[in-house]
Length: 371
Image 1 (cartoon, rainbow, N blue to C red):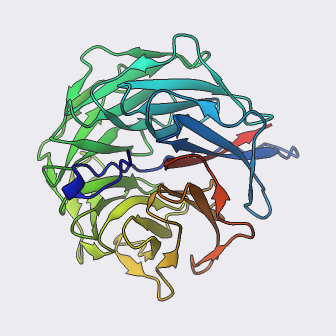
Image 2: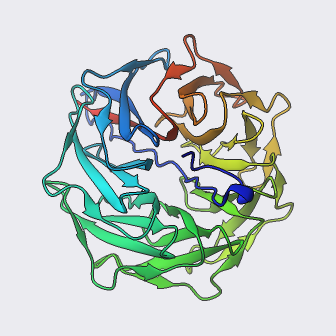
């Protein structure tokens, strides 16, 4: 069964992609990195793993890939250090957890994995310190919260979890400071916002939450400075944009919002520099692209967009340096790959794209790992 569908089919389950960055070396030392991409295949019950060519952006399957998950994996998130991968299993009501071999990209299931979540877990977010993981549960209308064992990657549900959300939470994003969490409520056309207790990981809903969005908000992303939040609205075919109040985390819709996308606007990702935004459009099989006005957060559509992708793209991610963009095409079992023009943000298909995945690719994440 395909998950990213319109209201007529009962669900639209898309989530923001987390991009994890390594840290640079100091002094005269030069840190070397390897780059990997991971795709959750919703009808194959697997994760495809790829080595990402640092020069061309092309993908090559990792030895041993694909790796088995629970039933109907729909989202994958990587911890900031690139040590662990976590997969939301829609029909298993669980999270599969893996260690990542930094030298090869191969995945190994953790002890005690999978970990129980709520009903129909749709998305996962990990805080910038790698201490906490949050899972949006689409049918139980709540957020499961876990502490992460930094050495072993094991998840332990924290006190007070799960935390109540709205009706149909399907995407979750955290601000870079790890102080705030934002959750799209698909059936209520709004966004719940929470403060995060830095010691316990507990969630407390913010004053004024939930904040209004468009029709069936499907995905939320935060820019790298934590100044702006962007929400794709699946049925209204646009993007709601908000300024984030630095002290409180409250959302204020910015002038000009919502910004036009296409019907079936699914996943959104922001490049690491906060210059460009990209939206996967499920129905028209393409990607909308925008320049971001630095002072206001307003989106300016690129003249050359949208860019063609595969059939029914439902997830989109950008690499840690903003050089490459990847889209998971749920109905053509492939991943479209693009190089990014650093000045304009325009996308150019990478040689060999699209790259084969397994059945129903539904989420893509990219990571660089220091060697």
